[in-house]
Length: 299
Image (cartoon, rainbow, N blue to C red):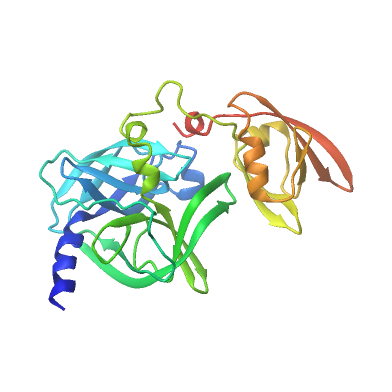
């Protein structure tokens, strides 16, 4: 009991509430809204906060509130679209911070817990265990080669830490999956550890990892990838792709699952033309798309 109380005394002060206000004109406001709230974790005493990208996307500054209700206007340092993480910097030093843990040695069944904000100066905790370690892909042109899922349910706002019993941050809670035994999707902290220089550089460094982007949402069905929707103003919409199109091939290479589709697409750089073979209206068509840059689109 004393150990648990001591652990919470270390973890809760390093977990923060984030509030972001996004301009109406920003492209993300159409999908995610203009007022967002989330959770973040202080990972450096000099004020660095790690959170999930969708909470702060489109906001150059956010309001961050600590457990003791001290509030700050914080700078959004970096949006990382590949991992789905973001870094915010507080104008304060000497803050309580939590260490980050790599996945090496993490095992299925290992005890973990999630801490999440439920409002300014308030947090909740949920216990569980690691139930999955492996690849994950989503409907918005997103793949994690290493993802974590847990039986712990997210007790509050997204972006909070998944921690081990020593209070080390395994990763950032991104999505509520609501699958049996796999309630929460976690982006491993090692995505930040492996590229901290990039994360701490505003914008994208020269020569940074750019990859082709279409602005589509898709789902997998019977070894096919089907377009579910298109981002207004995105490259896919401009090229004439439509919801319901079945993607058969990318630049001549056959597509049978969503992860393969994304990796074929990402062989190209932003601005490259991508040739898609699609099935639409009982016939096969070829659609050429001038790919875009997701970072520029959401800048």
